[in-house]
Amino acid sequence: MGKNRKRRAKNISPKVENKTEDKVVENIDNEEVTALAEGEEAVSSEEESVKADSLEEAASEADASKQAEAEADSADARDFEDNDNGHDSEAGSDDMEAAAGEEATPDEVAGDAEAEASEDGNDGYEADEDSKEGYRESSDESDRDSEAYRRAIRHQRRVRVQIAAYLILFVMAGLLIAGAGFLVKTVGERIKEAGVFAAETVQEEEVSPEEDKVIMSPVEDIEDESSPVADVPVSEELQNVIDNMTLEEEIAGLFIITPEQLTATDNAVKAGDKTREALEQTPVGGLVYSSNNIIDSVQITDMLSETSKICKYPLFFAVSEAGGASGVVAPALGLEETALPSEYASDDDAAAGASAIASYLTTYGFNLNLAPSAILSERPEAFGIDPQEVSGRLSSYVISLEQSGVSACVGSFPSEADKVSETVTGCNLSKEDLESRFGPFYSAIDAGADMIMMGNVICPALTGDGQTPCSLSEGAISDTLRTSMGYKGIVITDALNMPCITSQYTADAAAVAAINAGADMIYLPEDFDLAYNGLLEAVQNGSVSKDRIDLSMKRILSVKFGENDK
Image 1 (cartoon, one colour):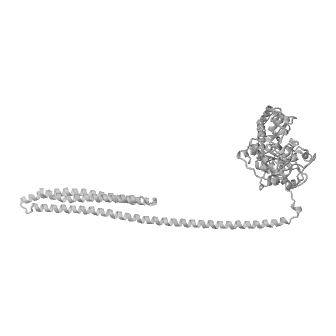
Image 2 (cartoon, rainbow, N blue to C red):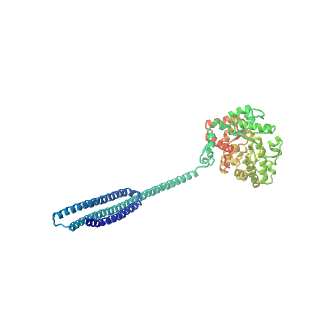
Image 3 (cartoon, rainbow, N blue to C red):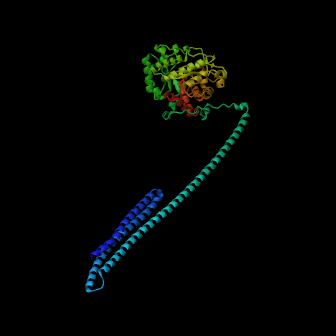
């Protein structure tokens, strides 16, 4: 019996070795599955969902194979025990048979047991090999399926790219066709317009001289949006101020008058209740002061300060201060007189003189100087008669004055009168001669002068007739100063209470004529109430457009709020 156990032990050792080999194969197979899974992760997101299903099936088959192997091993172990027990029983039976005298020997019984054990072990090993071979075939089939799927995906991608390329090609072709059509249409319209323009030109040339002399109304000329002065850009804040103003307030803001005209008094030296009531009813654009309004420095400072607090909108506090004894403030307060413009020896002298004047004007509250003069003249208040020299002095003076906080009002465009009488001031210079004197005015414009005053002189070369003063002339203001010379600042009339104006115009007619001609501000009308009400009525009945008033108000408030383009 001991010999039989030894033989059975020998038959078991191949089984153990086979199991060790199975473990190695199983590890190798597991590594192949892992490598396969890692490789599949690099596939695009569109393939991963399908790949994952394949891997899960493969993993399930691997788990089933492992479970089958485990069950096979367990079955082998049970068979071994059953065989062992069976052989022991057979041995006992054989002994009994031998004892009973049968012919079977112990060696024959042991031989039979070894044969059966070896056969059982070989059968188990072959089952394991079949299971592994099945798993490898399943893995190969999965790989082939994955490769086929990848080829299908790549084919689909190529198809989509081709479709997108064709769509882009069609869109670009459509755009090119549409662009070509638009170009052809545009060219055709331009050719048609050119033909119409040529025909109109021929018709215009055939018009008689009498028909060609058509005088347009000032309102139509100013409202033309193609005009270079038809728009004044302002900030949103300033536009809101204008939009919230009543028509009455806007009309009042176009006037610069004296404190006496405002309060209907003989001599104003204080801003009291009358000033308050008048400014609440008609908030004028500015007040001009003379020596009659100045007692001492404290009085004039308080008067201007209180007036500024009373008025709803910013005011121009104006004075004529050219320098020397011809000024207003310095002689009235006993201040040291500055040099007259004719005494300046250089541009730097002119700048220094303007700075000195601005220094004391701002101390008392003045912000507008009705100076300097751009006229070529030998008078003390002028810079001289040499155009180049006058232009340099004037430019330096304007820049220095405005940098010091006082607006300059350059006067008086277009020229000095060469014919003076009680009721008429005339200038009979030709247009060419007048233009030769415009150099200093161009210099003032380039220097950024906030305001230019028109002269009341009659210049037929600019006005087109021998009756209209330049202050009320569209030809002088809109056509020449605005359009030809490009001035964008405030245009103010000369004093409209002068005989050369009052002898021909009532106060209301002069005010309406000045605004329609292109002026922005009316200086010293003969009768303020009549001029104010006449202009208000003209806007209400359409003789003056509301847009024209808004345009002037934009220019005025742009200077007062510091938004004017220098």
